Image (cartoon, rainbow, N blue to C red; front, side):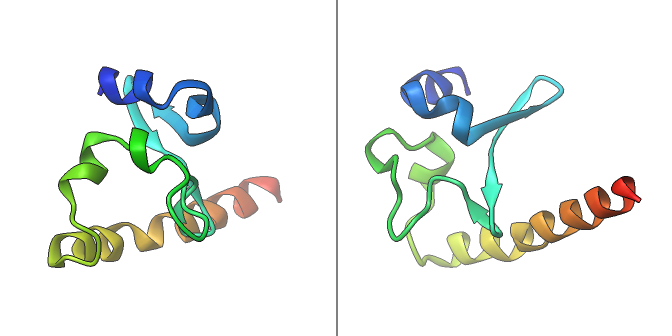
Length: 82
């Protein structure tokens, strides 16, 4: 959402990518690009992240649902590079 985008401040270009007019957090190594040992934008995190309690069943479901996206994108990029 617009508030989320603004809240991320200077880090927004490194953490967000657009598909059409929808903004998504970038993935790095199969997880959110903001996640290192801990979330690097915790105080500024998007509402979607705020709505998911860490290690809750909903959080686990999101991780399960999105886990394969980074791998699928890598496969696409490798095929395109051939």
